[in-house]
Amino acid sequence: MERRAVVIGAGIAGLAAARVLSERFAQVVVLDRDVLPSEPVPRRGVPQGHQPHILLAGGMRTFNELFPGFEDELIAAGGTRFDTGLGLCSYRMGRRWPSAPTGVSLVSATRPCIEAIVRSRVDARPTVTIRDRVAVSKLLGSATAARKATTVTGVVLDDGEEIRADLVVDCSGRGARSDRWLAALGLPTPGLLEVKVGVSYTSRYYRRRPGDLTGWSAIFILPTPPGEHLSGLALPVEGDRWLAGIGGWHVTEPPADAESFEGHAHGLPDPILSELLDRAEPVSDLVTTRFPSSRRRLFEQLPEPPAGYVALGDAVCSFNPVYGQGMTCAAMSAIALGRALDEHGRQAARPYYAAVARILDVPWSFAVGGDFSFPQTTGPRPRGFAVRRWYSRRIAWASQIDSGVNATFARVQHLVDPPSTLMRPAFVVRVLRMAGKRRRGSGPVR
Image 1 (cartoon, rainbow, N blue to C red):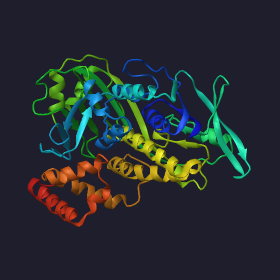
Image 2 (cartoon, one colour):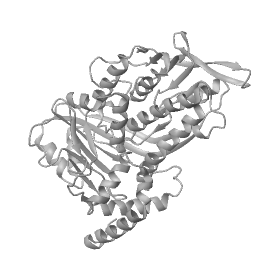
Image 3 (cartoon, one colour):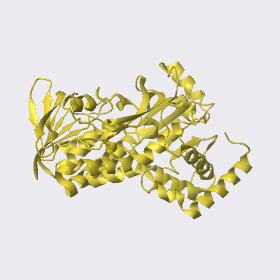
Image 4 (tube, rainbow, N blue to C red):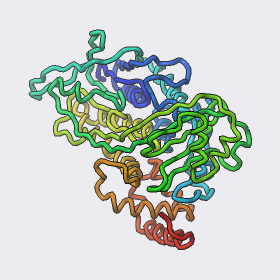
């Protein structure tokens, strides 16, 4: 067992990493510059904490692996479980999806609630120490004769305190200063993919009462590009509340007051969200967040990844939050880190980044593929984008009239099944046949 690991950041990614490292290091120190609240409330260091969050089914499975009983604890704290096909009123590409079971379940709760449960579990582990209100200013490094290079050996805090470590895991988020820190030690820095999506979204809490949403548990409305840009969402969360969010791609002025928020809701292509908000009582102020671009740092392409250091979570890949992939990919990456350490020890960085690249490829392709449906989106397009977009649209059309296609696609979207499932010959034939039927029965679809 190694002596000490330092984790920079006490968000979902940092806590998942600390849980994995707690079984492999004698001491794990988690550092965060924010004030970590004792209650499940939004905090300054997580600007998206006020907004709706989704933990995908694959993420729930991973969190249950890391923290046995996690799902039951989340429900006991007020989370709501529902089947994505039966409970989620989903509108996309001009119509609602039919109500039919997918076998893929979600538990809806706020990001602060999820983080509070995870932090409590991690904080209870005897090898973990969580320190808040401390900021890392740079990395420590020392020359290694055998490698003829510099190895990261710890961190330096803003007050000058040095913490030595056998491994530093950077989970400091989208604004990670890893490039600057690594360059200061003469270490290589990764390339960057950036897709400018111009997403803005505003949220508000409402009181939730029985019968508010007959026949459904949640709402998700997506625009049909290129003509529509606004999306809408309402999730049941703890405290008998709805968390409603309205936003979209390349929106110059997101709703900033109650009148414009309700006006945007009434402008959505399906009236179900506006009807809910007209009935419900608001119990909070509005909060707006802007997300200018998705970013992916290509650590897997480094010929010589820095020794003694790895990045995880948003410090590697920050997704468009509309797709709800961040927490799930962070938890899966933490599992991958543990496996790489078990198999490769101090040489874990390269196999770890290779594993993370495989985790990220599918959700990144889904996310940027959807973003590039809007002509205002700019940045590098994934290889094979045009073909994938053509096929994904036909999967979506087929899903609208074929519950089997919908269930299969839901399992891939939620990172439960591999994307190869969508390429099986029988499934492809079924998709093309049902997509043609959907289009012939409904006229032209944009």
